[in-house]
Length: 135
Image (cartoon, rainbow, N blue to C red; front, side, top):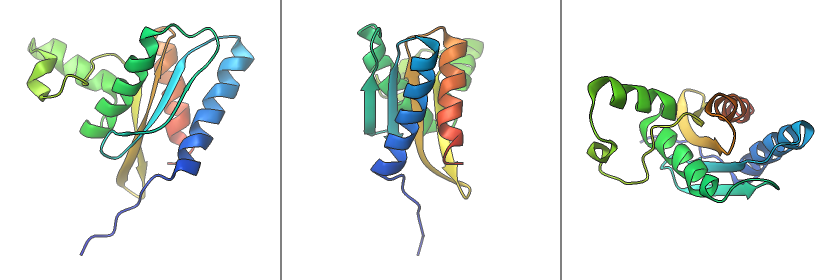
């Protein structure tokens, strides 16, 4: 028998709120997605000033990080290093951009955070900050 932890909607909203506060303090807009361990959406927010394409990109960053248990940037780096298409992962939701960070709790993957709308490095910092709230 296995025991599994699950990210709750309260946890997911706490992550979204922390990142939202950071974005507002900086006067910036972005999309924030929190996914469960399978990569399916638990919580989402598009803040003021966020461009529309960032919606799906943030969701896909969280999906990628959750499905692989690695930051989406690591997946992208591996794809670029081996010159293989993202379609090799078997799902068009996989993305190679940084800004998706897995969330681990007591060594178990419980979900992921995706942030999109800022330069990639800033997306990565905010996603990591959100993930750290649970870890």
